[in-house]
Image (cartoon, rainbow, N blue to C red; front, side):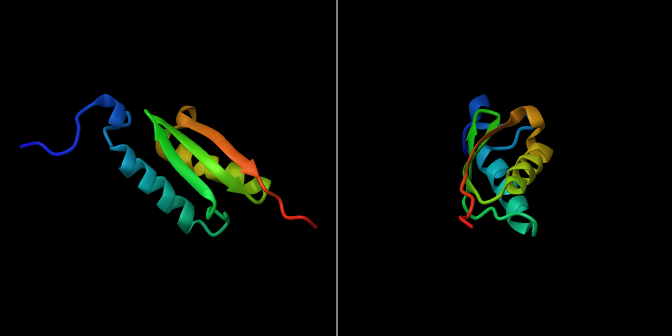
Length: 88
């Protein structure tokens, strides 16, 4: 008896499922005190991580990309986050 799928599209290059990769990145973002990741969404497209949603400052963008890259590699991270800077 087998559970889940064995297709390459559902797994990253290290053999982890997309859900596992998303959960790992999400957890890493949420525990970092230097980033507001509450409006960042993480999706997978094959082995590529898509960072979507909103950031409130430029440092959050760099930090989110850096954290995701540590997990899946820089070449597998696509930034689709939009800036939503507070009005001063």
